[in-house]
Image 1 (cartoon, rainbow over the protein chains, first blue to last red):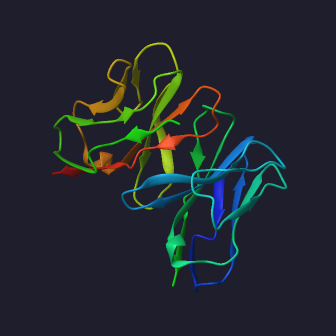
Image 2 (spheres, chains in turn purple, cyan):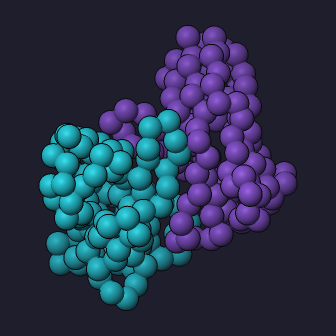
Length: 112
Length: 113
């Protein structure tokens, strides 16, 4: 039982490049989330999904897009990376609202 | 919208001493509260949660937290810490019917041998 798996674990991008972060969960959870973690700022919600085919904006959605074509996968895209997007990105999933979140191990992204 | 405040960014504690990590939230209306722990180079893991019922909740590794509605607090305590408790601790809150969880900025707990 893998839980929540994020790929890749590390990535370095140049300003303006694009990339997609993949999150996969095998717990049949309805809800999935993308957070970014920055020093001194805790975790901030980027986008989330309450079910297959649905997405919604979180606290800091600008510069990111997401898709949830399959229940088990939640993709986070950066169309034109900026140095301000240097961060550690965490995916999480849960059964529903107010249920505990299960986190992946993170993706460390550096934009130069 | 719910907001969560963790005033202490770092807490150094001697091994076997007690510790309290402070957390305050903004809205008591149907609030749900959580503590998550993050060990180095890992994702967050649920430590304990308050949804309803008894205001004192406990984890399996000796931590406890008390929901205090009048002070809008959910402080985390442990009577005797161990080296293995070294981690960053995040308080989080949400309101009933709200699928979004708001996190505090975290407290880094360092255990001094």
